[in-house]
Length: 313
Image 1 (cartoon, rainbow, N blue to C red):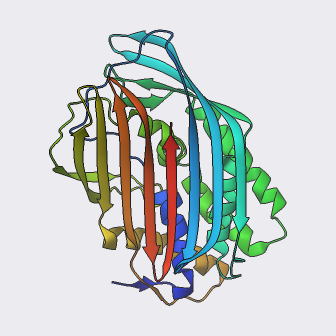
Image 2 (image 1 turned 120 degrees about the vertical axis):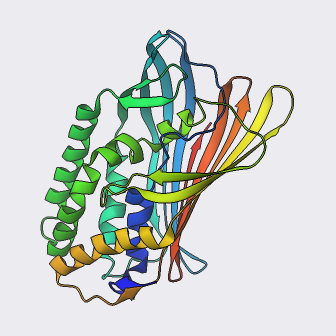
């Protein structure tokens, strides 16, 4: 299935889908029973994101962001906990191995925003969990939203001489300011860390029908989640989840958004191959706590591929 906009923009569609459309599901029907958080509990670990873009087998660019994280339970009750998750930057690096083509304006915009959004020295996200420790809601959403708005304003000022960049930035700003992006995609590592809190681990393979929110159109995207676990010993487990989405519906959401953007930029439109997507969650569980894990997202289209890995350890 193809949609009305240029084959030159396959890489643009991939970047948009990877960054904006799909992110950690905020809960699913069957999971693992982890210990709820306790009053004044503190945990420290490292959170990292590596995003790589490929043309065929050639690595075009790579971005790496690393933070030290301190998780502190501000308060706890039988109903749930209020938690502070504080990032302290260790590294933010971006490298081009192949210079981006001029027609990939939207891809350049989304990548540039991503670099700037995670370039803070320190940021604290305050959120609530339910009684099981599953993520419930962000407490300081307005504060985080104000930070994201300040980055968009800074980037707009830096790039004001580039008319096409400015047009594309304006089109995608609403997605970056949306509750779906701020509450889920921007803090994807937090959702990943709390993903297994809430229900009972099933070691045998299970397949579930799921619906994922997206900030591009607001309409949930249908998909499947396949889970399976393995007991390493009587206190240690490995747990893996494979998330896939309806390829045609995701492709149309991205294509419609980019078509509208490129129309406003005066760019020609042809067709784009459908997007392929998958997301793999891998966890190591020690006793009743997450010891570490990784989330790998892969989006491909028309010979282009982008891979993002998020690791908490």
